[in-house]
Structures are given as C-alpha cells and as structure tokens.
Image 1 (cartoon, rainbow, N blue to C red):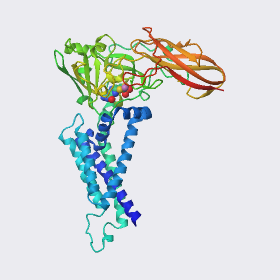
Image 2 (tube, rainbow, N blue to C red):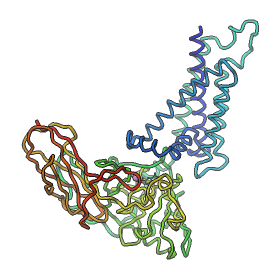
Image 3 (cartoon, rainbow, N blue to C red):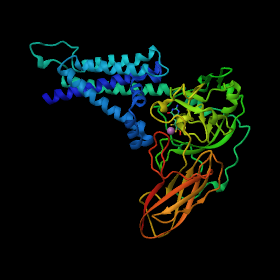
Image 4 (tube, rainbow, N blue to C red):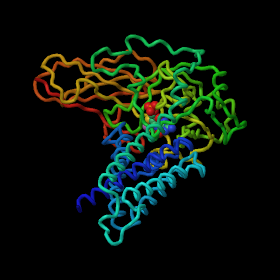
Length: 508
Ligand SMILES: Nc1nc2c(c(=O)[nH]1)N[C@H]1C(S)=C(S)[C@@H](COP(=O)(O)O)O[C@H]1N2
Ligand SMILES: [Mo]
C-alpha cells in the first residue's frame, strides 16, 4: 500500500510536469517559439553556464552538446517532477509550490530572450497552472474527502492509472501538434522553393588535383550534411526572407536597412572558403570547406560610410548571439561575404538561413554570424561580443593547423606501404608545407594537393614504408609566411588550440 502510494505520487508528479511542458509548448506556438519554457530555460543555461562546465560539455559531447543538454535537462526535470509529486501527496501544497517555482524560472528565462516582450511569460504561467491542476487532480485533491475514512480518499487505483495514462497521451499529442503547427509554413517550406541569385562572378573551378582521392581522406568540398555545426541555438531560428532585414547603424555616415529584395538587387559573387571553429581541438573536425554565394561586406560598408575611428563590426543574430569582427579584415580586399547559399543550395537552416557572414582567415566566433539581422559599426573598446564576454579572445585570427585523417586511430594495417593522409589550413595565409614524422625519426615533407586558394584548406599525403609494431605518427604545417605551426600544446580557449597532431598506429 505504501509502495503504491509512493508510486502514485511519483507518477502524478511526472504526468503533471509533462503536461505542464506540453501546455507550454502549445501556447508558445501562439506567442513565439522562443517563449517555450523548456527551450527558454535551456538557452538560459547555455548562455550562463560557467566556462569550465561549457568546456567540459564541448570536450565530452562535441557537436552533440545540444542533445546532451536537452537530455540532461529532461532527466533533471523528471527527478524534480517525482520530488514534486511525492511531497505534494504528503504535504500539500509544497509540490505545487515547486511547480510554481519551475514556472517562475520559465518566465524569467523567457523574458531574458533577446526578442522578449511581456507575452513571453504566458506559456510558462499556463504551464504552471496546468501542472498544478493535473497534479492535484491525480492525487485526488479535488474530490470529496472523507475525514472519517481517510484511506478512501483519492482516486480508485483504476481511475488513477487510467487518468494518468490518458493525461500523458493527451499531453504528448498536444506537444507533437504544437511542433507540427510551428513547422508548417515556416522557413523550411520557403527554403525548398527559394530562388538563388546568379553570381556575377563564378568561383574558379576546383581542379581535380585539389582533392586527394584516397579512401578515408577528407574531401576538398564538405557537403552541407557533413559540415560541422556550432552555435548556441537550441532551437534553430526560423527566419523567412520576408521577415529578414539587416539594420546597419552606429558609427556610419548613413544608416541603412537592407531587405531581402535589396540583397537580390545587388551583385552576388561565388567564393570557396574554409570555415573553422576556435573550439577545435588539435586533430579535431570543426572545420569545413564550401562554395558560398554572397555579397561583399566591403561594398555594403562603403555604402553606409564607416567613420574613420570605428574598428569593429558588431553583428547580431536574430537569436541574440553576437560577434565582433575587425573592420580591417572585412575591408582589406579578402572575400568577406554576406552569404545566402552554401554548395549551390540556399543556406541550410542550421547554417544561418537566410543570411550569414563568412570571412576567410577569422574563426567563426568573431566573424561567421548566422541568421544575422543587425550590424552596429563600433569599436573594440566599446562593445564586447558573446564569446569575448565569456573569456574568449576579442580578435580571432586563425592559427595554422594540420591533422591526420587516415588511417583511423588504433587501426591495424599490414606492414609495407601505408598511405597517411590529412588536412592542413591557415586561411588567408595559405599552406606552403606539411611534414610528417614517424616516431622519433626525421621530419619528411608530405605531398600536397593542388592549391585552390589561400582561403581554403589543403590535403596532404605521405607514403610510409611501415614496419611491424606500434608507431606514433606526427604532422605539422608551415604557412606561406614561412611560419611553422606552434608545437606547444595549448587548449582552444581563448584564441584557438595549438600543438602538433599525432596518431598511434599498430602495424601487423
Ligand atoms: N547566430 C550564431 N551564429 C554563429 C554562432 C552562434 O552560436 N550563433 N557560432 C559561430 C561559431 S563559433 C562558428 S565556428 C560558426 C560555425 O558555423 P557553422 O555552424 O555553419 O559551421 O558559426 C558562428 N556563427
Ligand atoms: Mo566556433
């Protein structure tokens, strides 16, 4: 009997909180997807996680960090829900008070979103009310109570379990419907039919020799589906071209707002550019190369007239994320673009649909603002962007890096010729040399693939006469200024990891 009562409390808590979240989702469809209590709280945690926690999450989960966070939150909420159910059953109304507190945190987190107005509090308030009603109904606090026979109070076993199941199923259906309604008629549908601009200048064709056609080597062009994704957005922004605009203001002669039509009336160019994340570990995979179509940032800045004492372009995404790029890097003639297409497709939603920035030679966190909607021309001593506020550098030139891509770590190869292959990048400076070392042997030059441009990565390969046993192979690159990649191992924060990559291989 006791066990059943405990189980009832726990189940009532779970179903109540689950219904509350479902109610929050469906109401947020009418308000804004950013007002969803679950995602607002998640985003609050993302934005406010202490640096060591964030570092740990990126190291452990890499690009799955969002799934890890959402799963962790679901587990945490489930535990609190069980607690709320158990205490409400024994000591009313403490469980309800807990639910009110969750709701209050939801309101607080939703109001902290960059686009918030008062209506953002509604989904969390409705969620809390639904949670309390379901909790109390399941625990039988609405029926008549019989003081003379307290053991008869509450729902019958059958009624309790059938109600719990019914409410859970309805909540699941409501949450699912909310998701579907939110998706219908949104940017996903628009993107499928979007007409891309025809570039006035095509990118130079990619020579066959740019690609190292060895199995296990990284392809020269990264497909959209294989392109790494890094951002703080728990919900991918859903921004249609008609709702997109870029407001340009601050230290300029003429403020200006660009619409999608304005962009389409400008001259688009096609460029091949390799993008890299500052969070990449030595040997890591947070780099990708794509063909982009976009509009030169330099010409837009010329149109607004940047004041001479400004030195930073502070870009804001529709989800509130910000980056600060040195204006010098945007106007020195390199291919810094406001991109609308990636590998011949409109930008995938995760990669910034409809408009993002791509700047060769700067890490993404200081340049590659996705879903960009606002440009403030300012100064590095006046404005601080998202990651800089959280301990990362202000300016993010890319460090020379090289990595071994094949053979796989700890894979077994037979003795004899083994082809080692990998990738090297030093965007906007270019790669002049990659060297390979086996164990403590001498550094030997690797073969480089044909260069596309200084703004793209380069593949390398090395034919190794492998002898049986365990070996460690190393690689290192030199950029075209003659600078050798730094040997000293340093972590990604604050300005990008350094160190030579190595891999342990067993030769049979
Ligand atoms: N809005 C927004 N843009 C963003 C980010 C972000 O968190 N939010 N992350 C930046 C970082 S750190 C990198 S490395 C690149 C990654 O771009 P990708 O996801 O298209 O590879 O996007 C940049 N643009
Ligand atoms: Mo990044």
